[in-house]
Figure 1: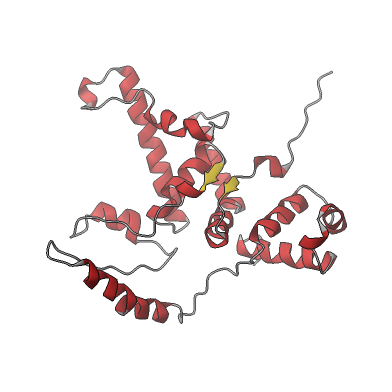
Figure 2 (figure 1 turned 135 degrees about the vertical axis):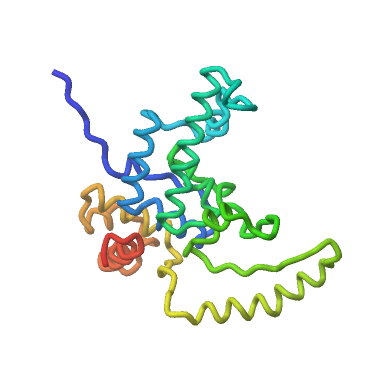
Length: 243
């Protein structure tokens, strides 16, 4: 008789290979949301992805059988590839819109869906360049978000580097100081975010707080069992499990 071994919840979690705690937290607080992960599984099913793609093979999958040119002149393989990429790109855009994430989350969501792994290089730079005036598509896809506040500096061909730097140090800095005083506050991020996430997933695997404590090096839980309880509760608030 064959016995089906049930996977632990933590075996399906997204692997986050990011050193910076703030960036790590922003990614974790998205990919560990239960509603987000359900959406990811639905997208994989719709795309026919039954096994995760190795991280290094993601770009190859995205460009597989890709053909340039008009749909009218493409063969079946080219059209199938185009439709696959269109469905995938549309799914990523919908997720960014649903969870109020901007352009810098495109690669994060892409690799979450395809490989279940996110790396440092997937967290795009906080700056980008685009023609002005903005197209309606750009405004809809990237500016109707509520993830991080943005400020724009407009330049022309005569703009000097020192002028941009001066604006960053003065007016832009003042703008973000005003933003920080708004009512909406970002989720509280622990300096031990990686440890707290590990504890959260151990608890999801049905380990008791005491069992988690017993498995935790002493230097990671210096105040004992209650520290683990508090950290997991706070993490659950951050990903929306608790309200």
